Image (cartoon, rainbow, N blue to C red; front, side, top):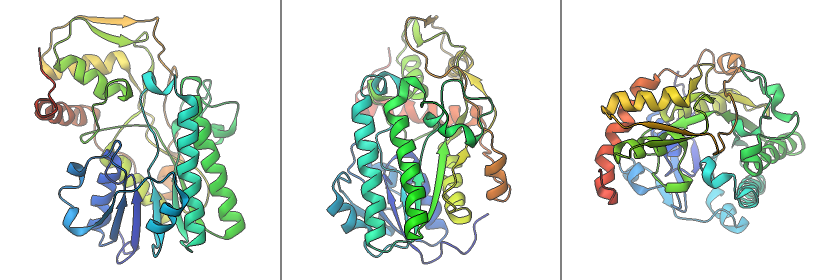
Length: 333
């Protein structure tokens, strides 16, 4: 699907050392873009960019400050803003204020810096967390402004809703070309292992590979998610930015649901682990179901849909974690 749009374009990827951002950098370089990455490395890692470092400009910068956003965005043709706090349930549910503040601060600063520097095209990366707890399944984009964002990630969800709104305002008032993507549950290699900040998949893989018995799973296990491999996720972001900078949100995901119970059982099967499973129903489990209506995604990207299967992605991720854990000082029992 790669065209000529990106050839020679100066593209700034904020959060580009993260596990999604680094995949996006790879795709942009394949399309002959001139890439700058801005990342403070709070979650991103230079190792994620190892294959690209000699072909990009890297800036270690805290984007919560407007003057620094202006500096890194000067002279760019496109800004793809992936920088934001994005953590798992355990951290997010007790840090709503922090999540809201940092999400809005970084996003608003980058939009304003783009406006001041005359950067016409801008990608707002939103989240499926903008949807209410009782959203229809599969979830259509129209539900993104109904009610309040999902309870367990409400601070983060409000932050993303506000970024979408600001993107729409800037498109209308300053004639910026703004794309808005709402990704569902991304996963894949290069995703950090970060204790309470970890998302559900790396958290479960870590527990299994450590040999814990029982493996404790938060919630009933019946809650479902729509898992999207990081490479597919990055390609969706690139295509939406290229083809649909219309200030109109687009889901990035699919309508295939996987229960958390099924997920952990797949992990056990791939690793050969024999541990018992314990579903702790006193712990929160987040949204009951997540599944994306992707009819708009398919339409605006001329037929794109995620292709990497969960089984393929899990096997790749488990092998990556097996190699990474000893380097991080994590021991298997």
